[in-house]
View 1 (tube, rainbow, N blue to C red):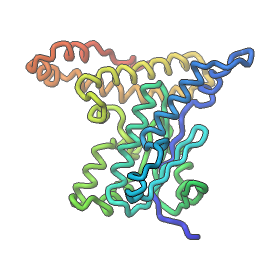
View 2: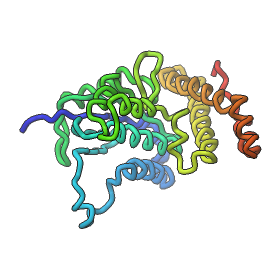
View 3: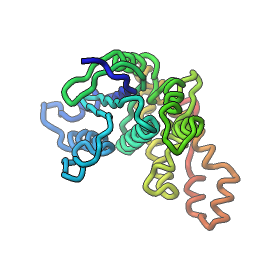
View 4: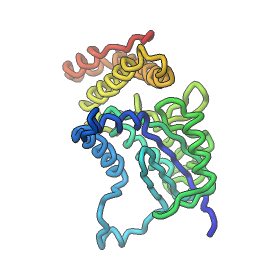
Length: 280
């Protein structure tokens, strides 16, 4: 058996220990509501890749690509052979969907995407690419973001869709990403999330509200606890990007455009959003 060269994403659900703690009461009794919330989160993750969809004769007739997805405890690992055409773009898009589904449940995640040697089957998962992704996630990702180096974007250009040039494929991939202050790229689930909603125009305010509430709740829970200063840093990172998003949706030209199109209620909704206090 030999390794395959695979693009590998390792994603960790943040605060999973605390989430689990809420599923059991002080008298060791189950909390069905909290248990169902975790079950719902797992299902949301699995639904992105149809992991529970039963094999049908029709599905079996479709050639499978090399993608493998493994979920265990608070982790998700996704990998595929690097030479799959446009698979980097589609997998980044799916990761964005997963992040957004978890946001609606008040759950955050962090991860890293690498390229290297890996064996990933239904039964076995190991290799240097996974070890590197784990180290990047735990040491470099730092905040609730899924990060990748520039070389993954360039790899996407190499294994592009037959309808795209290398430059076009890279542009499509970068359209899902944002470059952070430390030079790392991350899957943007703030400003670039709108187009992935079922109702991009009217669903975006609700999504913004969900993010804002998650950040405020997180900052509140860490405000007077010196032992949670590392967690506070994560929410402050989110706060900066959330406040930038609020600036964008309250831009005078954008609000004027909405009103010119008769979308007065939508314009009022956007203007009602408040930035999170910079000192929080």
